[in-house]
Figure 1 (cartoon, rainbow over the protein chains, first blue to last red):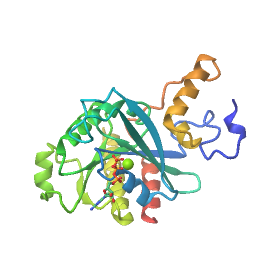
Figure 2 (spheres, chains in turn blue, red):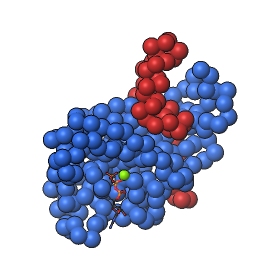
Figure 3 (cartoon, rainbow over the protein chains, first blue to last red):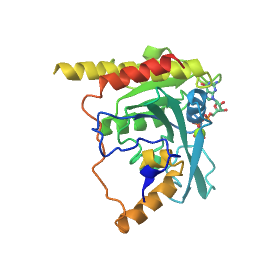
Figure 4 (cartoon, protein in one colour):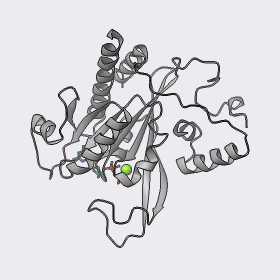
Length: 206
Length: 55
Ligand SMILES: Nc1nc2c(ncn2[C@@H]2O[C@H](COP(=O)(O)OP(=O)(O)OP(=O)(O)O)[C@@H](O)[C@H]2O)c(=O)[nH]1
Ligand SMILES: [Mg+2]
């Protein structure tokens, strides 16, 4: 099948000839537990209406999920969010929102290939999902920043308290955000970029 | 694969099925994925930052 001949596909053309450094698309993954605001965040910064792809899961997840959802549920719909920001005419930033619970980790295969980094969205009402997510990202060598969504009914912690609670090393950025606000979500992405940039600087010195 | 499903606006699962079919039929070749470089291209990050600033 020759995808390159089509002009309806905005992906990188002629990728075969290009060196890997000449990427025209970059990717960021937004990961977090159930209802933490992934779809909201992708939607608030995306220039396109975020697409949500659905994956239906049966049985496999029963019993291993956290307290959410009813135990009698026999099928769960998993949504992956997809959004886009045009950076320049040549460069597009793709945003993927993906669920963080362990039983969804099969979705991560491929998703993190070539990703610049990740945003871990944290709900202070359910910190335990975040632990697993961050551990898994570390294993995979994916750099990430932590964004705490401030839900009105969630317990409030000082950022440094959260850093301790989440067992984060001092170098990993952690901030509060409101995923519904574009500027706030943008700041989160910007923080991730600065963090990645600082990593790149450190790397180049060695 | 995520890229492909994104570009083609196909659900992830559909893309998976399609690619598996095509691999089986030897229509496409699986290549080593572009691994995250130890040093991400700084100019790329800077470009993204500039773009986000304008958002
Ligand atoms: N107060 C507050 N509410 C938020 C914030 N982000 C999202 N919400 C709300 O939280 C609810 C869930 O947000 P979603 O974006 O659907 O969460 P999700 O992570 O995509 O959820 P699932 O896909 O179901 O796992 C929505 O009603 C949002 O309006 C936030 O930063 N602050
Ligand atoms: Mg969602």
